[in-house]
Length: 92
Image (cartoon, rainbow, N blue to C red; front, side):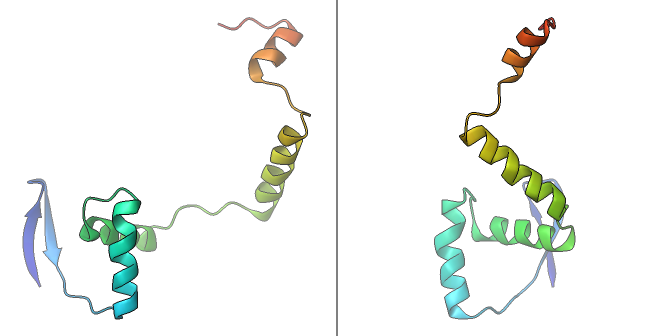
């Protein structure tokens, strides 16, 4: 393992990783599509997510989001601005 600097700020450790060829092909195709400048940047981001995963939403919250989306699509909701106006609340 060696250390390099990346962007002049953080010390980076260089590692060698073996991956199956089809996975490497998928990474090569995917990283620019997702806006990464390099596959190294994409892999670092994936490793960060693995080490510190994003919080997961509960089943109840996911159910509420589905219900909310359905209500919006059926025209059963109003904008925050419309709600404030209807309730006589000041926009400021």
